[in-house]
Image: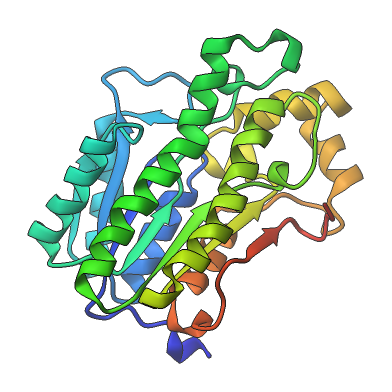
Length: 280
């Protein structure tokens, strides 16, 4: 089975490649390790804040490009407003221009924390609601749409894997806006799988529970919720996760890369939980 994970000659477009908590960066590195060239795409601002997991600095994106190239692959870094259809489409065109094609689409963008709806629904403003849905659902749809159009034109099939969340599968307090957005990713992916099947393009989503803040450079949405529910992340983990620990970015990335590969050639329209045994 491991031999089937080979992306030699293929090109991946990875959105959210540099953002915390590091799943996109881990995906980009692992795809490159298995032979893919990678377009590393993210929302870049001049002064990112510790509380914002959706936007990154240019240095963070450049570091992911360097990490991909260190694996022996070609890479480009693209600063893109992922909620702007024209800019997303241009990023796919630039990927084709620089790397030749697009075979794999990974939507790993999104944001948590108070800026992206973390907190009681009664306290969420309309502006925050729209920002949360744009960052966690609209951006995923636009990335999938633009990449799928390129894959259909190429005529060789392809794979789309999108980051959702365990919050998409259950109504967790303080995660209402985020849960609604990520639930939309799961349902949208199911529709994409049916609509794109005639073109041999598969679509799946992955639902992680949460990357440990210490492993991924901070996880403000998780830290807020765990603190509100249990007093600390450690108490939250002990009560919820049978494996007794949180996951690393690489553990979610491994599942996403598998779903992108020919090893998952008959898997489409699924959402895969990566939750350490927690059930939703």
